[in-house]
Length: 355
Image (cartoon, rainbow, N blue to C red; front, side, top):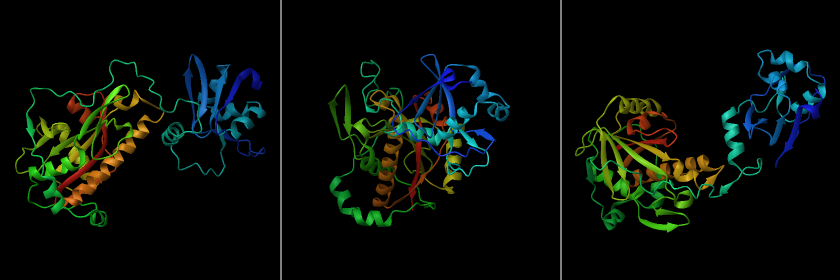
């Protein structure tokens, strides 16, 4: 194959080449190489370099997808092999590769969500601003559900009994042992009020935004809190949704196979069996994606980390224990609340209880 008859190479910002060994005969397709269609054109890319190769000859595709790709690669023109190796599309089999610890999905996410190595739209481009279905600041809840209005704490009393900020930072730790005494509803109320309530609603460019106790990209506040109550004196066990505007808990369902699955996952991940509350953070993705391009999911995860830190520090200030959980199930809570995972699903978890 002649290079010009096979492909068109489009370089982007951050394009780089690596030195190659001309004496190596054995090659592998890089784990970072992938194909996709773009406006009816077959595109070859990899997640390490900012190069886009438009393929003219579909037979060339077979060299990458055939089970005997090593044999096929050896039949390619050496100039093409050297070019693809220098651009990170293929690797020498015995090469000492410093990229071994990277997974494909991690490298793709990192490349596409940071500025500098792609030509995609980036940041607040408002690409879907004319859509009629931009999600509202509050999600719709069935009016027939059982809602429990929480008592708003006296701010002055909270100031007097809480630790100062330095002591909160010093004393914060991940708790994996909790008291046999149940947590109280007023402790849950204080905790949610300090961390997650809606303080103000105002108009912004194309949509309403809110002000809450933690920072959030664009003040869109796409994150929602669901509490699985396991040991509270005044609340029956089950799954609840926290309404941050009304400062209330809305009962969704009693403990069932879905919530049991969430609880078991949290117990195994935290190595703790007796926490009182499991808090699952979900994201309503479209609340962010209509405005931000390339960085939407990255921004959601950053917002989740900020909220988790807020929850952890607030628990310490209220003399409660907490432990952030580093992983969680994708579909279980979405199934329980009747949402498609791509509309709203879990992005973070933390356990809470009396210590």
